[in-house]
Length: 86
Figure 1 (tube, rainbow, N blue to C red):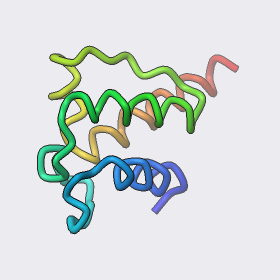
Figure 2: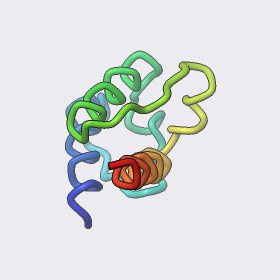
Figure 3: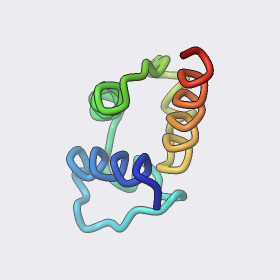
């Protein structure tokens, strides 16, 4: 597992209400009992951890960030963009 994935999982574990769940790329935020308010905080924590800005709109991004894998892919893409811009 990459450092990015490890950090994302750490952040998700901090906010998950269902702490007994194991996480994989297919794990849904709903299964971790992370609701839209929690997801907003998760997004802020990920932004701080990686120095990126994740476009976030409660309604649209609940679907776009619905699983651990989708969050990982989004962060990877944003990190790649920021490296190109640098």
